[in-house]
Image (cartoon, rainbow, N blue to C red; front, side, top):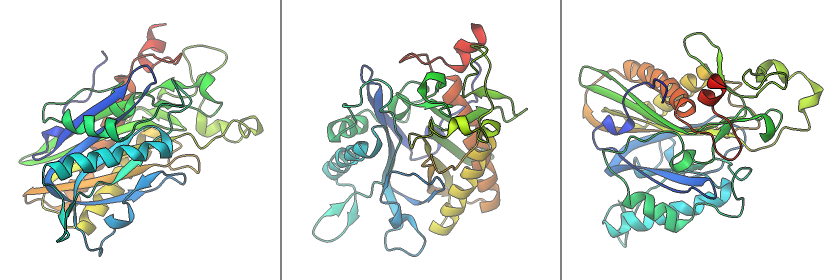
Length: 325
């Protein structure tokens, strides 16, 4: 296993993570549990998103807190896994008190993993429920797990020249403030090192098995236009233990997108559904500017971890396997 940035989103007080996957079909989902609720917002920057409950996360809406966030494979089919998350939370008596019932608030975002494994098997309500049952503060696995099971990057020329990616998490701490991130990385573009901008994983070059074509530069080529498909996205959650309101959570999600754009090139394209949710559990007083700055940094770390922790599967190599080939 290569060196990974330390920490996990579960280092944030009140946050637990659970995964469920089908390793034969190469798909799965991940649930980020927020206990009795966390202040939340979110930002969609990609132009091909698949999501649920994102409109509710805007400042000024009635509900200020969410109870869990689902990241899932299966494209739009995978949104069905959120039904299982809602059922689990309802059984625990967790949800927004609407008088007649407690309604769990579960935003969700999907990635497209139907080009790897089996396209007819997708996360469903049973898998979402199982992910909740597996949720724990001790969950720190990365790579081929949960929503990252079928993730890949560098699909400018199709899956034949792509690399396997996965799910990554990391955290940063300043005093009592903790900011953590978890991302499933299924980008159209390449993932680059935040230190030197060199491609870590992405579109493989036809001339050498362990070198890459720069996707940003190759976009100008007419050869790529028939290969482009709406099969990509980076989805994730940024969480902190700071006391933030909904508008400040939205700013945190926007800052996380900045961190995404530092290490995914190109990012936020018409072929991606890049979506970030932000959670604040509210136990520490900290300046929102510091929280957002750490949010951008930890997002970059989690995305790079997702690539470095992944393992070859479905005929796709990883950053690590290419370096050793």
